[in-house]
Image (cartoon, rainbow, N blue to C red; front, top):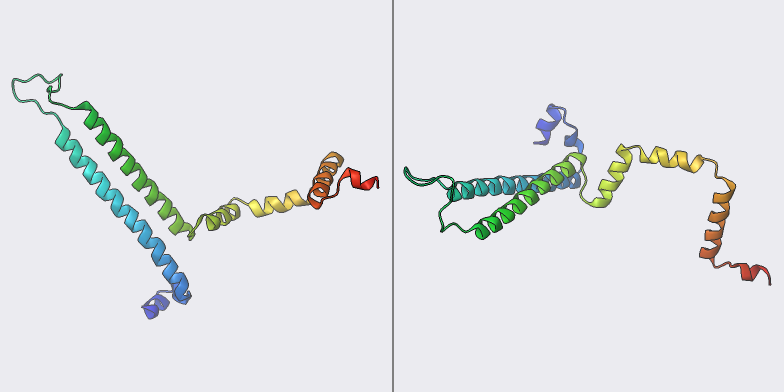
Amino acid sequence: MTDLLHKLNFKIADASPEYKTRRKYQMARFFAFSALSIFTLRLIHKQTIIRQYIPTLFQQNHQPPTSYNFTTDAAVAVGAGTLACGSITGMIMMGTAWILDVSNFKEFGYRMKGLMGGYERERELSEMEVDEETRMIQDGLNDLLEGKYDDDESK
């Protein structure tokens, strides 16, 4: 397999086994949520077809039959919608994590900060000149954190 990847000039051929395992887990999570989403949407489609009211030739078509239970239908709709929303959201999140090569929220934060130019902006902010009032507040907070109080200076 590695020979084929080298022949096709793939960069992953030179990657470590840990990296390859990590990428496989990310791919497996994405495909698991994709399969769950497909299963959920097929289930919802079948439930919709089963619950559909189709009147016969001489029945009224503007009123459902009296045996129809609106409460059960609403509960099923809420449950199915929640399941679909959760599975699709999971699929989107796992796909994004797979594309960005992140495995937890901390890595995601670092990746987003890098992609949005956060490190450069943070450096620019640290190089900016601080005005006198801000410096006075900052020094006061640092003194409080270090345990220095105004009462200690008078002694």
